[in-house]
Amino acid sequence: MSFYHGNHIFYAFTLSFLSISIVLLSIVLIFLCRKKQFKPNKEFETTTIIKPSATNYPLSEIDSATDRFNTSRIIGKGRLGTTYAAVLDKDELVVAKRIYPWLVLSKAGLGFQSMIKSLSLAQHPNIVPIVGFSEAPGERIILMEYVDTMSLDFYLHQHVDGPSLLGWIQRLKIAAGIARGVEYLHEKMAPQVVHGCIKPSNVLVDVEFCPKLCDYGLSFLASKNEKMGLLGYVDEEYWLEGKSGGACKESDVYGIGVVLLELLTGKRNEGGLLVGWVFPLIKEMRYSEFLDPRIDIPSNMKPIVRLGKVALACVGNSRKTRPKISQIVSILDSLDDFDLRD
Image 1 (cartoon, rainbow, N blue to C red):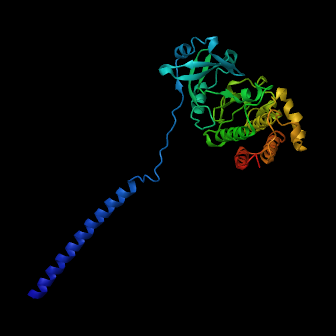
Image 2 (cartoon, one colour):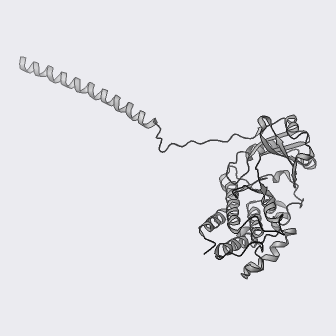
């Protein structure tokens, strides 16, 4: 009995020890698993920086930043307003677009502040950021990042009698960059954004020939029947009444096509006449008759021909049959693989 009793005690002690060990081991394993689960892996760790929405500046600060909207600060005038060079606190240089008073009065009921805050969330290498705004009775002002460069319109059309400032390689790069910027607005922004007026004067080109789109999404401020600045850069459907007309992704694609034609020919689309002139020449492959004469025709014409075909698809089809922006980006990006000297 004593031997049996001793064995019973030994087994009981052993089982208790094993039970306690298993419990302790389980606790340790749970702790280690949890620690491993929440420990960040630096190899795959990513940091997402969310851009803050545009700052609401008091009108008095904008007034001071533009030296009371001094005419010497004027950079340019467009269909929506006058742009000024402005210097904010801490010597921050920005561009202030002062919307014309008659447009402000006609659009007084629209949610200007919410629209600009939404548009200001855009962040892309081919987009000029919106950094602030000001809203007061009779005043709507949009502040954009200052880009120390000139517009594509300047590069293409201000030196018509001398050598071009842009070669074919630069033009191909600019074409692809414009398409990527529009693709970001159309497909990557939430909510998606229609530019509304894609033309060379709304494309800034930096010193590395990287294009940056400005004035995107501002069609809500414009007058529907105002043709100044739009004629020739939007399709015929734009002028239709109701839901079938107005700015849309398809009209943006048409605008891209017109800009591509200007890159190819070096000519401005005066009154929309460029499309009618160059359209049959591209179809008949008569490139020597319309390519910008300020630049030598490259040895390898394949990328130039493809650029022409993309432009034709953008301006030669109805809204229903135009290519999607993602298709355009895919084709234009592939042109970088070509060597124009081949």
